Amino acid sequence: MLVKVFGSAVFGVEATTITVEVNIDKGIGYHLVGLPDNAIKESSYRIAAALKNNGYAMPGKKITINMAPADLRKEGSAYDLTLTIGILVASGQIKAEDVDKYIIMGELSLDGSLQPIRGALPIAIKAKEEGFKGFFLPKQNVKEAAIVAGLDVYGIENVQEVIDFLEGKGTLEPTTIDTRAEFYKTLDFPEFDFSDVKGQESIKRCMEIAAAGGHNIILIGPPGAGKTMLAKRLPSILPPMTLREALETTKIHSVAGKLKEVGLMNQRPFRSPHHTISNVALVGGGSYPQPGEISMAHNGVLFLDELPEFKRDVLEVMRQPLEDREVTISRAKFTVTYPSSFMLVASMNPSPSGFFNDPDSPQTSSPHEMQRYLSKISGPLLDRIDIHIEVTPVPFEKLSDDQKAESSVDIRKRVTAAREIQTARFEQMENIHYNAQMNTKHIREYCALDDVSKQLLKTAMERLNLSARAYDRILKVARTIADLDAAPIVISSHIAEAIQYRSLDRDGWLG
Image (cartoon, rainbow, N blue to C red; front, top):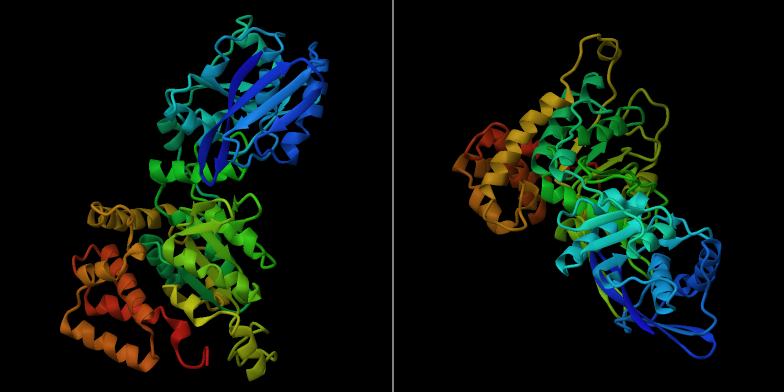
């Protein structure tokens, strides 16, 4: 008897429906075709044990299973449940006339219970698009899949529950989630709040500008100046995610298997990889390409602490994704694109010892050590960072001050107001939502300067020997400063403030 059941494969952040054809005939053998990987080939052992432990048997006949399309590589153990149901129906052990109306996915344990899978959200989206009635999957993944309205999503704990439901012996209630209610559960009391930071007013101002325009920022200062503390508080002042951003972000985390019984993500991600990270772990890849840290930080913040400690080639592979806001991973037979629109926040000591030009410090670094340390960060990478700011240690008087600083919630209100101005400005453009995403054409249109501002910028360009890219960065930052002031045009004071935020372009830093 020939039976068709349906599963799904995830490539990048999109799913493809897989038809699993099970044929049982005279003879002996178990033949699995359609480019399965080792995890799928080993499924026969898990299936046989799970069936035996639930009162069923592996047919002692010739079982041929084809996973179509046969030229598409299948991977992972998530097809165990699909194959099990196919074998049971094809061998006549259960009757399930409606089995072809459902997508069935799940990894089997030997006792028939189910383990979580990856990519439940993209699979559910595809199932709805293709008109399937429902989706059976492990209970741990049910919340992320239930975000998709118009599809019956059933969270399963044991293979027996699926069998009973398909035979009409038992009932299962589909899981429903009010996506909007889930999404609008915002945290007004963030774990890390700017009210905890004493002093550092100029750095907080920088953070506010970076958050308002989505600009990349680098903090330079000696150990203990508060660079990491400030960076961790940046997500608390970013505007809340839109529903579209939340879905995009949830999709990526679903594919990476990082959602643990969570529905829609409503908090912006904050990723802080260690400096020993490899190229593949940062940008994504592998024989079956998985999203890297830059994609996991999509619509959020990627924090690289002690930037010069990262391997130079690791930093260089970030250059193109920083510009294009997506990363494309190519393999011989397919290409996968992951979105990577993130805010880069980096921190570094000004020298190997951490104390550069500090008269109170006995530790000094030789010019050669300084050059070797700073040469790990290339000029092109620095050009892609809009704001460079020096962080100085906080004096004792400020540290011991009992006065509460401005809270993240108050700063976020100003940031959100500036973002709303940008949303209105770019509403006709598909891939541009805030100032940092502007290209040269938009900069000429929205950052027009008067003669005084032009002269000021010309002088700064000549004195600091800035590149054309740095020129564009200054104009973008000035536009954001103007938006925070609710000013329709960029004036000289905005330009003057933006020029201050290019510390690393000055003489005495990189050469």
